[in-house]
Length: 467
Image (cartoon, rainbow, N blue to C red):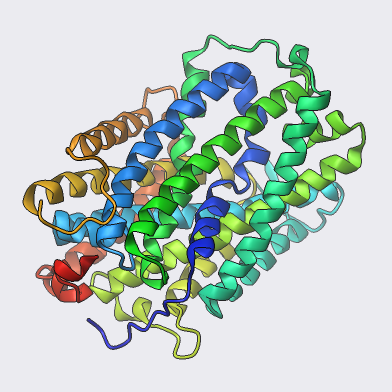
């Protein structure tokens, strides 16, 4: 184990829960829920999201067992390293790293978009056009400012970042409850007509979004080494956070469907905000919801810089990436260079304009599914090879949870392939191709330095102390 590894064990149960929940109920419920209702209907979208959420929950159970048994930085990196080996660990880690980076970059583009809802004429300083979208200097500057702010609060310490996460998550929940109860009191079932859209493509579009939206639950395993709580509690908190997120998203889907009619949803830039304004009868409530959306952008942004920097740090610590990425700040105890790296990528993303949103969701979603698949394989392998390993939180007595998680991952993976209703486009494949070409370079050129890495050797933990 490197002498540089001095991450601080400062997070409590509440910190862990809000990190995960804030990541999962970020901005997606504001910007995407109107489209879900339009594509699949209120009941269809709710059912698709329930199925997708249940499948993700199955994956969450495998994570919970592994996180409680191996509460070490890097999450997927550690599980695959012990369950599959160095090559499998590199694939799982590099895949989830793109998932995290894609969310961080997504938020850097989403922030200037939502600001436009409150200040519709703030875009000035035309720069260029990308796939039909005009990019303006002020729009880009908002994204850059947000990137620098989020990187800074993570740079100065995870405890401060978790405090910011708590404040913003409470704000999201409060605004979300306003929408839900307002729609229940003043909404109409007529607005939700049709309740069900008989379109397989629509249902799959909603379902395929769930891996990207729920990826936040695995921020808990990523930061497990910095949590001052019992390993069994880590597994429980992960599952609780997924349940809470599923309930929140389902309630929002029904609130938007009952709160805004189909014609208004079609014409709306942000149907969720307009639903809030409609059920309360004043435009100011739409702005209040957007403020909750901004809080959601920041919580996801914050959580995924935490998760992304930890997995990149773990890869550097086991020599899969250059040592520069494994530096820990001597004062703040954070993986400072990894944070700077991800923050830098988020600074660049606004220059690609609004089309970047869709590209990042789809490209990042596929690599997240790859990471899920690798964790499921690790779960199965460890159950078979190390049945005596201490598991403070067990996902059932048999290995069927692992096989179900594996099948779910394969199902989602196939949906991204060409010819499928949710198949990726050329831009998404370019992002994926670029990321994996870089990964292949590190995997090949550094193989001699990490090929003998084992979990016990480099993470400095034996099977008995894994609890």
